Length: 416
Image (tube, rainbow, N blue to C red; front, side, top):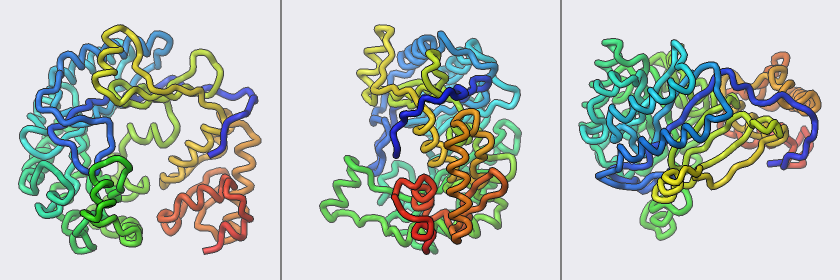
């Protein structure tokens, strides 16, 4: 993507409402395909980690106090291993910084199984009102192929517990994760997984194509011929079919990989996709916050991925960052396009003008109109731009065409 050299005075990142991400970097088992900042450990130092999370919170919020917090997301790793007391302590500390909104979405990631999901009722008492459960597959053979620790029976038990918490009102919402295009999964297996998970009435589903990330055990297995690589064509077909497959359960696609009943879209993830501010705490966490120096639209940072190094630095009252960058208009444009065009709602170029400037927004609108006129699978309704369902499976192509980074003509870019 293009580098930022703009010097136009632009509106800074709005800071009236914030999202907060808290990363817990330990799991009982690290899956072969995982490239997250996680480590397998059966005795994670939960209390010590909580104390250092609170220290990082204090260091990061000296110059920023939003009017309220709209969402909190405890991700990982497996944060349900942390314990309700630690979750409650972090929420209390966040509330002391900025009040939680009356409708604040507070999500906990968990895996199926008694050890990894813990007592979900206790977590709701600690303040959790949404759970995201990593099912991934509903068949034991494919779960073993994915190197998952749980089995299908454990997934059903945990989904049943979540359904009961939803019915009682203890949870306001819940989601499940599924992988598609994994070894041994064709369309019949995909439909089986969807039916198994949706039978419990969850109002949200995230469905991701299995990818082979560099440096993971799965990548090494594929390179040695010990595991088959994902079938790109099959994954594209599955991605295109998912809206119709999920329609009987009342879930609509609102983002390329995310489906929800009305009112159950992930508010936290929408902050990311819409380019809003979010504070991130913990090992390997990435944040995007207002820039107190006023040098750009916002400040992007990411923490080191080593638990030992992160903890050692925070113990010395030093932020454990691997990288930080002031984000200006051109970089922010690219990021907003990358995430905004994944949304069904698309992007509103008029709303971007104060932040990106008229020149960038007008150029995008002209380019989008030319592409639409040439038959590209895009919609331009006034200043709102979106990708049609047909264009979803080739989203990267249309992103490049809109930014004109590929150097192609409009007619070439729009050609099927």
